[in-house]
Length: 208
Image (cartoon, rainbow, N blue to C red; front, side, top):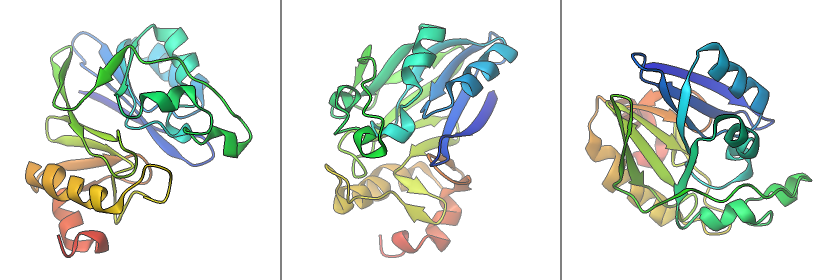
C-alpha cells in the first residue's frame, strides 16, 4: 500500500493519500489546504484518485476540496450529518478564519459501516461522532484514520457547535478500542500512534 501524509494549512492538518500500488487506484483523506502540494503528489506518483473522504466538515480538513475535486474528478464522500457544513461558511468555521468559503456538495452521503474498494484495498467507514455529529474514522487493514476523534495523547475538541464530549468518548470506547491493540491510528493532526499505546498513556482513556 502506498501511504503519504501531508501536513497542510496553518493548523497543520494531516491529509493522507493512500493507493493500491499494483494499479495506482487511490483515495485522499481530508484535503485540508495546500491543493498544489496534494495535486503534485498525485501527479508525481501517477495515481488515479477514485474517492475524496472527509472525516468531518471543519474548514481545516476541507479547504482544498474544490481544487482537488476539479483536478481528479474523484467522488466526495462525507457523513450525511456533516454534509451541510460543506455549504455553510458558519458551520464549517471558515467564516471565523476570514475565508467564508463554500465547497462542492458530496457525491456520496455516508451513514457508517460502508465499505469502499480502492484497487485491492478495502476502506471501512466507522461513524465516530463527538467532535462533530458526522465525524468518521476510516479503517484500512490494521490502520485507522481517526480524523479529529482520537489523537496521540489526546482527543478531539468538543466545544464547537454540534460537539459532544460524551459522544466522543463513547465513539472511542465502543467503536475504536474494540478494533484491537495492534491497530495503528493516523489522526487528523499530530503524529501516529497505536491503540495499545493510547490505552496506556492517553489521559482521556484512563477511565473508559
